[in-house]
Structures are given as structure tokens and as C-alpha cells.
Image (cartoon, rainbow, N blue to C red; front, side):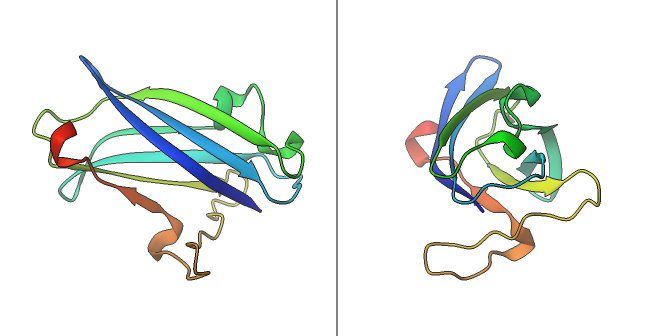
Length: 121
């Protein structure tokens, strides 16, 4: 229903800016919430929980084939040992939108895990 075509993480003095480019594969009437967990080991060091585009352009109005860019700031641990866990869920029932990779295999916990590049930590 919603694809993620591109991710970019840019380090900043206070943390990072994360930019996601979503692709609307099929129209939906659900306004999904984005969750982003910054994991430092097994601990959630920071998190973002909101609609894409800060609720200004919810998923329920996206049109099929539309690309939607969404950028936001997040705090990151200084040690570079972090990972980012992200996905979408329905705020009404708490169910995550099923997440599959390019091969059609469902990802664990219906979330995408991003790790820092060695030269960007």
C-alpha cells in the first residue's frame, strides 16, 4: 500500500535529520502514523511518533503513484553504535502496516532497521 523508495540520514550537531521518500502504491483511507525508534543496543535512546509530514499531509489523502518526501530531526547517541527501527501503524488499533522487502518477504516486526555507515558514525 505504501512503499519506501529512499532513506537519507544526515548527521548534525544535535543528532540527525532523517529524510524518507514514500511511494503511494495504493490509495487508503487510513492515516498511518510513523514510528522511529533510535536503538542503542536493546534500549530506545530516542523516538519519533507522528503522521508523515507532521500531520500536514496524512496518508489518507495520498494518491496512487505519488511520491511524498518527509524529513524530521532525531537525537542520536554519540557512540555511533545505534540503529534506527521504523515503520507505519494504524493509530486506531495499533496494528503495524505489513512491511515486505523487494522479494516480497515480510520483515520481522513489520519494521525496517537502518544502521550507520562506518564513515558516518
